[in-house]
Length: 365
Picture 1 (cartoon, one colour):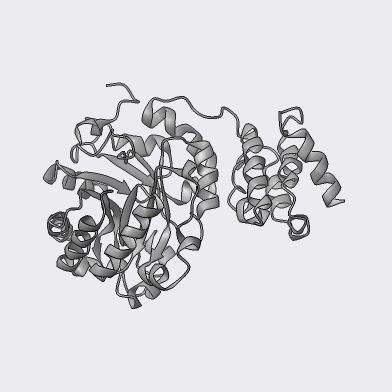
Picture 2: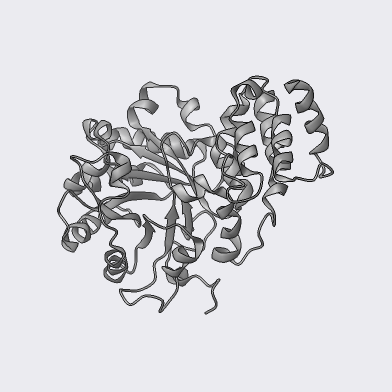
């Protein structure tokens, strides 16, 4: 097989439209909102995108549209839910399916104290029978896949048997896709940030899970910083610790350096990239911003997610500075994106760039 052939072709859940987990962008609180996802979709047509976690209480007692509205152009996109009551999760899963989401994902990996107080997230791994019942209720309620994102274990429970038995029990409820953050979650004494860094990564255990559950789709999350390193986990024969996995999930790296996503379609799907140069992304970005502002939105809703687009390139600091300037953002003019693009040498002759550049300059004057 060549480097673009994916090892998971044999998985019954990989390859169909909307049923492909080869490359996923992780759900991240306060980050992967619909504006972030729309931006990421410009860079990759194929990656699977996830919402921020939405709690069952927020959906059942709050503004459903505010939490669930999204642009169909974001698809495939999954809704991540936080909760632990089967009936409530089933009701929210139905809402997600009705809104058009391609997948309902249950959060069993977040270690934050706030989430623990709500009796969901990583602490649910201590109750696999309850998670099974939650999954079963959602599977009965919807036709789209119900998936689970979880850790290898909780606190100092590091035996392989713990996560193996968790998956075995939850799979009885109907889940066929498990996204495994290859660290334990330490529920006491570590912040959520430290929980992403301090507990050691144990990739071999995730490959062992694939060996023990060949009929399930096993997706690796945690510590992956490059496309090359991520893709190696999908390549047959590339690792001695088990069979290739079905997919990978990256989070903070593509958020902080989003140009990484421009290489996903070619490396993981043997499909052409959408852009060869990040400066060309500015034109469709301006179009996104114009639609959002015309609908009454704020430019900063989108601009805050694109600050890292030019990381490591000349002019990146100027791009970030202009798009973080409260005075410039107060004008709420999408033309600011064109002005900022001039800092990185974007060609003013690019279609759609010159006109907003002049408008932005007038607004900022």
